[in-house]
Image (cartoon, rainbow, N blue to C red; front, side):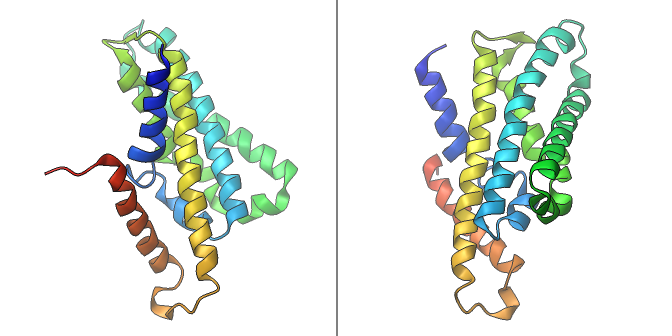
Length: 202
């Protein structure tokens, strides 16, 4: 393990390969929940918790169960089960702590279960930090940290989007592009801006 590797993971997950703006994963909640900053932040924290914990648990499952017994073909279904369990936990906590927030999220909170961003980081951890079904040195810490950083990247995109959309509520917007059409236009412009972190290629 070294600090340079952690810094690389942070910059890559948050800026260069942002899960929403570069990998285009998890767009359903990104567009639907980003109308206001408070719900966007709450959803981001929920996603960050799920990505972090699922990264940790899926690492253990793959390292000590799937890889030793040559069950790698069960990776996707086992990871989905882990993610679903954590989403149910988050859903119960939000329902208990803030019923109003739970009602606002509606269908999008349980949809974290099938959010490809959450599954994507779990699969990416295995692809990056396992070689020939063997964990590279420090792979556990790298996987956990990448789960946090993907959540931070998701949070950054959500807060930027919600801030822009809140300001636009104070402006006159043509009815033809109001709400979702405008949200997709903003998302595309943000994505183009984030492409700058990846540099220019011929």
